[in-house]
Image 1 (spheres, rainbow, N blue to C red):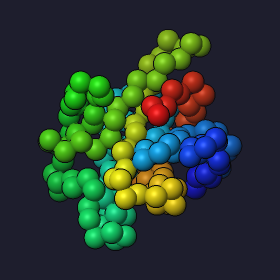
Image 2 (cartoon, rainbow, N blue to C red; image 1 turned 60 degrees about the horizontal axis):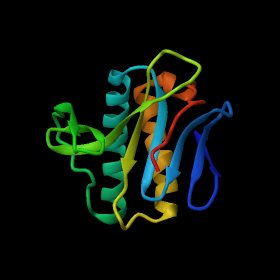
Image 3 (tube, rainbow, N blue to C red; image 1 turned 90 degrees about the horizontal axis):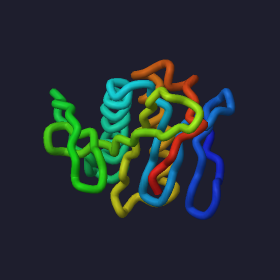
Length: 152
């Protein structure tokens, strides 16, 4: 379970049951941080991307993004962002979290929502995606992202 707390105009913090920030919602984006490795971020992106696609398919009749049954995950650069992609289909942005207090590299992922996704859709989608990530990567519920730098 994740709580959604207002954090300025058109933005929200995502807080787990322990009271730790685990993500954010900004206009047309949902992000989750604190992953210890690229592999964990890739697994979270795939689980979250599938949950997001299923949620949009039920709600709007459109699967966004359209993921394959046999994903071929890879990094993809578009000039501005590093993406986790299934073949050519971008799933989520891969963000390298910068921390001043730790030499350990941490990762975050950020899903870009379609233009028709309202704040209410983003909030509900964030809860669905967090649940999928938590099931795929159980330690996701207890990770911290104190120094995360969300893209906005």
